[in-house]
Image (cartoon, rainbow over all chains, first blue to last red; front, side):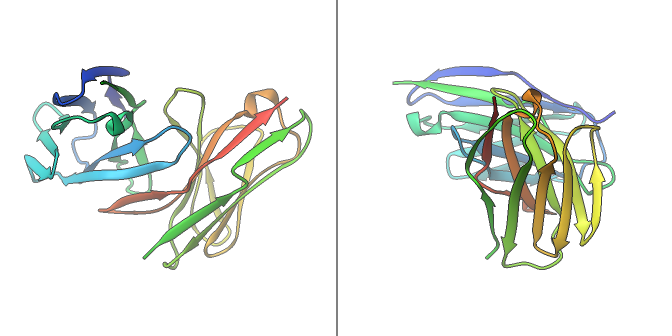
Length: 111
Length: 111
């Protein structure tokens, strides 16, 4: 069935790089996403990658996609305290109407 | 550009009372609309989605219902709230390569 899995917690020091990993099951997904949720707020789309790409970079964010292993990662360079949030990995469902979300990775950034 | 608003932001209701959460979208027409629930510290659970006026798909059996009386209006309701209905409810719009746009969320506490 459809499933997106990611680790629940990650703790890094300010200035270090953060890497959040995700695995998904639907190999036909055309788009994969990373969302950010700050406390008490809705989700905000951070970035997305099309399935025919291996990598996408956007300022401090780098997304890597390994289609063979169905593995997606989000790297945040020079992590700041403002990056502390929950990060959700997501894919489009096979029918195309729904987004399948992972449980979210809570990133703690220590000053 | 597209915007999405949901209200109220915070709600405290007694068990057995009714519920109405409202979501409206601006800047687009005929969007896909979604209601999610997020339990404390957990991932997102899709409750309902709608691809058009009067078209509602329910993802999980529950005490809640949804309606779409207008193209850009999506309402989440309950006739009698249960304690287990407490949570953070999120409305979202759209599903394109740019992902879903989320509202700011409505925190419901049932006492």
